[in-house]
Image 1 (cartoon, rainbow, N blue to C red):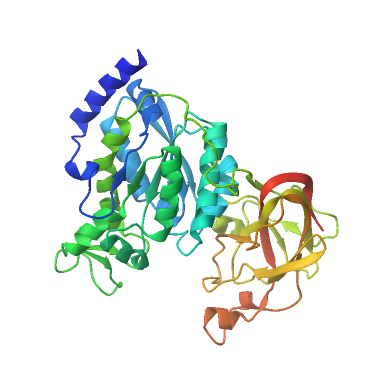
Image 2 (image 1 turned 135 degrees about the horizontal axis):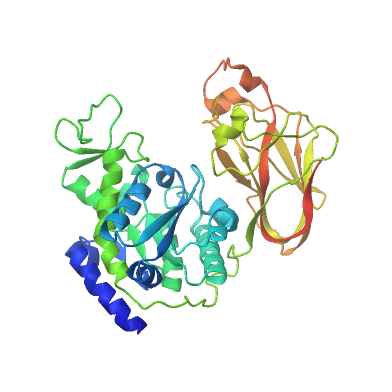
Length: 432
C-alpha cells in the first residue's frame, strides 16, 4: 500500500514540478544534484497532507531571510494541503563543529521530518578529515535519534570557492561533505552550480560594492544579477538564484525511494562527532565572579534567539571547571569588543590560551562564537578548566585599526554560554 501511495505521490509531483534536464545532470562539471536515497519520508507525509517539520541547520546564509524562506514558500505553494512548520536552527558565523554539538538542543528535540544542512561556506578552510568527522556526527545523531528524518545537504559558496566550480569540481569543503553523503545515501544540492553557470554566461556578477547601484530586481546597469555585496552573503536577488535551484531539484528528491527508517551503516570515520554535545552551566559559586545575564540584557539581545543563557565575568581568575570522558573540548560564548584572554588547562596542564575577540568584534555586536582546543584528546577521563587571565590582548593589532577609542575595547572579560565536547559528561560544569 505504501508503494502505491508513493507512486501516486510521484505522479503528482511530476505534474506540479516537471523535472528539467539540469535537475538530473547539470552542465559539464560538478553535479547540481545528487539524488541518492531522496526524501521519501517527507514525501509520504506531504502526500498524506500531514504536518511536515522542516529544520534548517546552518550559518548566516541560512539565517538570512533568503533561500530558507523561499524553500518554505515553494513547499507551501506546491502542496497547499500539507502543513509545513519551520524549525529555525541557523547560527551566523558557525560551522559543522558547533552544529554537531548543538544539534540535539536546536533540532532533534523539536522532532524534524526534514533537515537541510548548510555549512560548506563556514567550513571553508577546515581540514577535510575534520569536516568529514563533524558532518558524520550530525548524520549519525539524526539517524540514531530519529531514523525517519530525511536529511539533505545544501552547498552554498563564497567567491574564493567559485574557481573550483568553474573548473568542474566542488570546493574542498563540499568534497569532504560528499564523502559523508555518499556513505549514508544522503541527497545533496549544490546551489553554486547555477551561480557558476550564470557567471560564465555574464548574466550574474558574483560580487559588487555598494557603490554599484542595483535596480528593483537586483540587477546592475548591464542587467546582470548582483549576487553578493561582500563575496559571501547573497543579496535578495542572489537568494532567488539559490531558490531556482531548490525548486528545480526538489521533485527528483521527493519522487525517489520508499518511506522507511534510514539504515545506520558502520561509521565512515572512527573519530566522528556522534558524541558531540553542548552543556550549559546551571549555576555559579557565590564568589560573585560570574553574572548571569537576563533575557532583556542588551548583550543577550545581541546574541539572538539561538543563544543559550549567557554568563559574563570581568574578574581575572574567574573560571569554569568540568570533567568528561572524550576526545574534543571547546566553549561557546559571545564575541565582542569587551572580550579578553583565557587559558585552557586540561588534566593539570596548560594546553592553550585563547580569546573570542577577533577582527569583527565591534562595539554593540555580540554574536555567538565557538572556540575549540585544536588537537584531539585521548578518549579517556579529563578535567578541564577555563580561566580568565589578567593579561591583555592587543586589540588594535587584531582589528588592524590603531587608536581604538571606544571604551568597550578597554574591558577584558568573557561571555560564556556553554561547554562543547565530544564524549560523555562526568560532572556538571562549575563556575567559580
